[in-house]
Length: 334
Image (cartoon, rainbow, N blue to C red; front, side, top):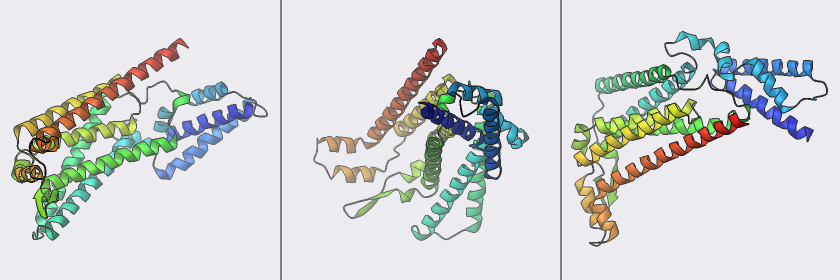
């Protein structure tokens, strides 16, 4: 029983140290981790003999050492060198690297596609101009998002530390990687949609059909841009806020609402999907069949799927918020 309790206490210590160092630069992460570990071990040796301590004793020691988020700020002085302050600055740097690199990758892929598939001549000046403009917009967007989040003071550093529910390193990394992959995919998709929409072509009966109406895409780019930016904003928030409190829940639902409005205006006001592609699909099915009706109203079908997914996401957010509030009420009673 004692070994089990010690194992639980050790797990809490590891999570605490990870929470402090998870967003630090690699050059100081290991040193800070070792320093905190040594401090904790020294306090344990000073107060307890023969490892005769309980889990609550460890929690009290960690509470005395300090809030892990505030401790991270003290060790990493870069927090205070930016307009975007603690604890958002380190995440801002990480997200900025992701967004800028994925934007650059998207433009490069689009340029390669245009050269080898569309047989377009390579224009260095135009390509450089596209890269500069896209990177500037990406930088501005990420900066504005973090200024907004910082000003709204999303609850990260001021939360009451629940030592039993500090993030596990493996799970946090997986969640972080999922958000990074989604951001990369969204930006690359957006770059290809605007710069090389022909890449979204589908072969039907040995003939290629463009999925999108290219002229319409160029004239209505604002709506898909808003939709993708909302998706990226959501993933940015998820990268450093694992808690579904009232602020984050309102932000997530607000993002879903804006996404729903943008997609509805886009798909109801414009013939976004190529009519030739839709006609080719309908020829594959017999009239009055379910597939025929879906293909014949394919754009409306896509909109319904998007709205349904956003609706489910909002329900999920509300359920997570409800569970979180119920948990807090339970803890207060205890």
